[in-house]
Image (cartoon, rainbow, N blue to C red; front, side, top):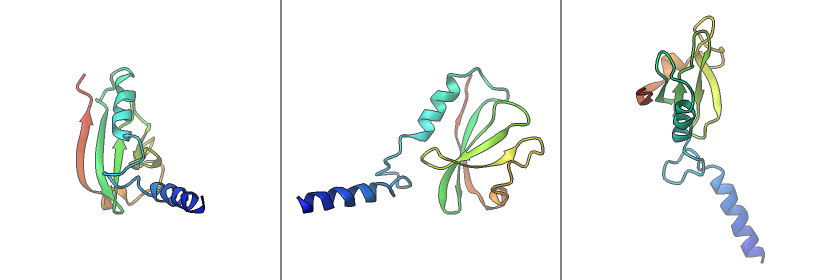
Length: 115
């Protein structure tokens, strides 16, 4: 019984750290869920898009806002909001990740609303 409990706890602990691993992610597909959410809303102008970056060694996703003066939020692979590096009244986001524009690399648009 102790062995089974130990195995269960170890498995649970290891799975908590797997979100960033593409092959064993326990997080639901954030990008697919966000695309479905955006498609359920009226078409944005400009068109909604999701751009993937590598920032601070992690894969992150920048999602465009639906209108002017709103933040463009940056999400981790699990869909947790990290910060808003752009948008808002100043266009400079929420100030929580001021180095994003200079440190983010490998930009790749993974989805743009075709409507």
